[in-house]
Length: 140
Image (cartoon, rainbow, N blue to C red; front, side, top):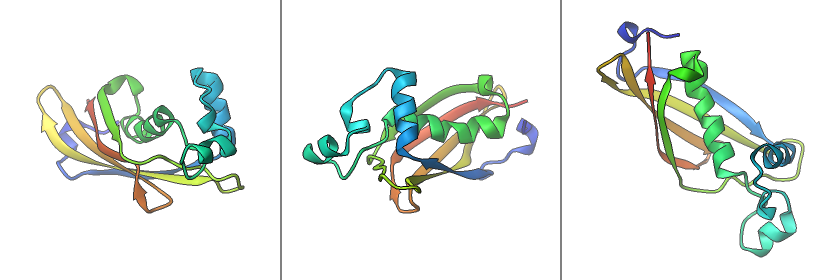
């Protein structure tokens, strides 16, 4: 776990890339109970104007949050977390799927050993899929 004393504004968290494949979406449907057809049926997703099947917003948010909890080393240290969804995450039906890359930077040090981490998430190195993503964590 990083120490509050050793972390400075501008400290970068290790970036992570998460593969997102259709099988992950189906598994998330079962885990979350969200079986909305746009998350697993390409024909319906395209019929309603989407580019392809899309990942659940909460799935994308959870993957981004892993960058923070992996860095801290304790999911219980996450005190606040919020995002805005700026673009959907289309998931093609191929072996590669989509690649979600998440980066984090310490933006502010607060009292009580807390820091604010800003996150950026892009799909396939291009489109930002989250905006205003911020987490507050307590460090030792």
